Image (cartoon, rainbow, N blue to C red; front, top):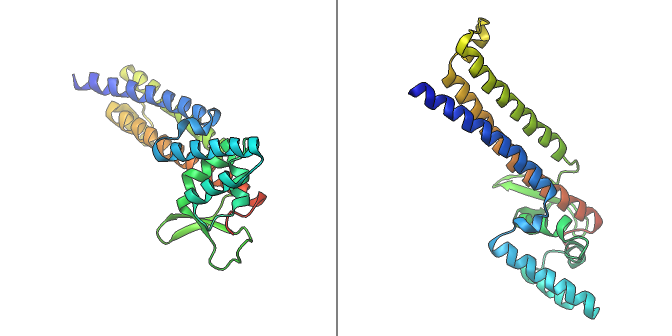
Length: 215
């Protein structure tokens, strides 16, 4: 009974790994605004509506007012106009909304220089990434998914055959294979979170190069 449960959990792990690959693909190919919820979604809608009005009336005052209300006086209105223009909303606006709290002007930088850092945790901050790691992280998730499929196949193989190589003898134990599969599933989950976070910061960095984020 216990063995059957272990094999069932292995199957669950394999299914999750396929879903994780799909989810990563979905995140890359779906508009970011679709994934906004709650307060940030309302803020995005407010900025989008005011952007349309600004274009229709050829008056940016409403958009500027809404942007300052949401982001505060420290942010550069020119950068916010780019971020929430029709062309920039998905590329720059949504990532900026999600990560605005962690963005800080370097203490040693002059205002308007565009030298912005991301505060990841109290006392820990780095510059905005200049390299897009999304493709690399996607490959990592796919490779991990392939490893999970291999481990699942080995769980079937070892029913009839035993692995004799000393460093791989743990493969003969289904519970060890199950544990390894769920460890990789957890690793893929963390990779997907890191991907979303770093990609947002990368997009914010691109915006910052177009126009300094802070005054």
